[in-house]
Image (cartoon, rainbow, N blue to C red; front, side, top):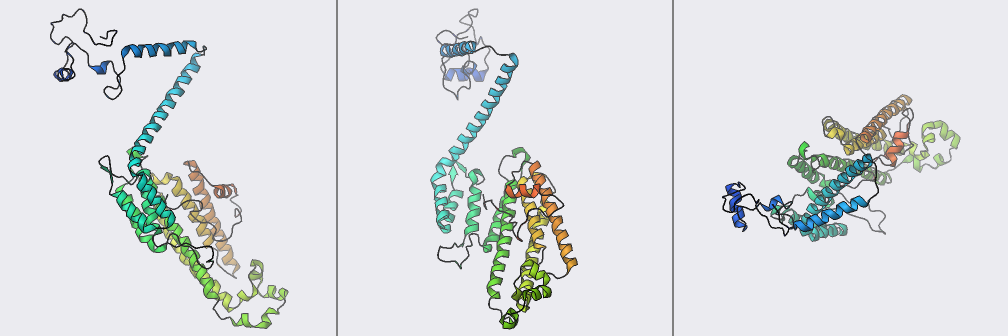
Length: 417
């Protein structure tokens, strides 16, 4: 029992010389003795909430504060009982959300604080292009301990820092005066190391249904596949650029023949009607142009084979949960279908039947992309303006008019984040 001054007393009907009147257990008696209390006293946990992890509250002050709360409640205007219940439910839910958010923020803040300077240094090194220093700083980060525990690289996106460092090793950028150079922020020679890094993370941190909010293979797979698609697109664009540079040195007797330039435009349209409709220059219809189209088709077919390999891996991954409901994987798979549909169009074809066949196969790929994007929306994905345009287009037409090879799979998304 509690007295007015906060002291714990025993009931009056119990004699003072009674032994253990409250029937405490031996363990409780030992703890009371260590705390300077007698066996007639109640444990402090009976009167103090969250004892001993919260400050001591004097019972008299607690009663006064409770009385003030009751008085303030009585001063409010009367409302219906249903409104009161609704307000109480809303307040309790808001308090629970606020408590969870604050606890999570405090926990992550306590983990970030000892490493904040080191992580900031890594970002500065990456912004300056000093990948070697960023690599050394990341090694220190991985070997560090916080509160006696090793650093978990899944927290605070440390794993993304490691991936960006591996992707950026040996990368180049262009200045304002070097228009002939091409920037290569993520060189293709690092693809093997990046793939090994993510495969190690996938094996170490598989998806666990009990801890579904933890960073796991559920996040690592989309990042790895997005990086591989990015490398395929970069390789495709680089091959086309090299082909254009090499084609300038090719000898073309038809191009050097001045009589070809004097051919009437109507005659040229009659000789090469498909090239005229496509806007292809007349000189490209010669041997040099045919060779250029052939080389472009070879690059196109190689890129298409690489994309089909990626698509098969993604299809195997999307067969089982939880990856079948991963919005980012569904978005990537739809982008791969659009990219494959673009690559189905040959550089030049004079066979009308072949043109009809390739257009029909491209329409199938676009239909598959729409279905992937629709599933992405059903599972909580956030579409960009391009996906909205694809979904708004009718299945009977070709959708929005786009140039060939415009469907970059990682458009608008940052690699390694």
